[in-house]
Length: 349
Ligand code: FES
Image (tube, rainbow, N blue to C red):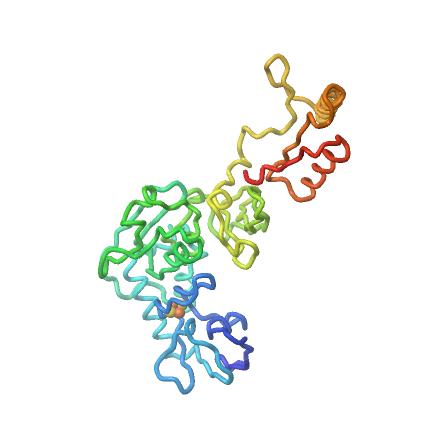
């Protein structure tokens, strides 16, 4: 379809909303409650625009694109409406960007910057931080929450852990875990989907706090080293150090989702306990050895076992962290070189 946004001719695909079509054509419309994965919520009204022959302002995240549609996102009427919403959100929360972990990655901050909202114009009350740091990996500050509902939709509809919901009443409405438990006492499995979906600094990763500002890191895409699913990760790296891990939203098979290990279990690479050289046990004690010495020892032991008891006396289990090619070579070694079908894979770490 051909639609016009701010006078510019744009292509839109069947089934796309105006917001999706705008993004696909490189046009920024501020938005908060919409996420490709959690879909249309139509709550925040930051994404409004004028549309020819339609009354009032339209939420572009919920508006299907139609052939010939004429959309305006940069008129004074639209910008004023967007500014008012952003101003209200900034005024009713504790959005102290300088100290916030989300600084530089915050969608509310982006909207405020785009709309030139420099400071909240409607200071309602002195909002106090509302912290829940009871869980292992997630830091919750409800005073930064904009009630967009992305975390709730993600928890219930995307990863289906069904822990998060809205609770409390009126102005005090906020996200809750189970029946308003502390996150650490709830049934949350710490997959961190809520952290990945949160557009502001209400749900952030504990372990990365204070380690780097977002602009100091660069992303390195890789495959999760744990089980065989092969989830796609972005490592956010500062210098030589991983600061945080996020799932790749448009990457198969996980589409941004991760489990607790993939998202938060990356410290092992810095462990002092990692083996960096082969060890051979002598008289009950391990001593360091060269690869040649270790491999000769293993090969000789294999030969000895085969000579005494035959090849089926040996079995091999390859590591779940091995790549496909290594696992292939492992089975080849056991079947072709050693001569046994005793070969398996531990499937999960
Ligand atoms: Fe459209 Fe929130 S992004 S209403």
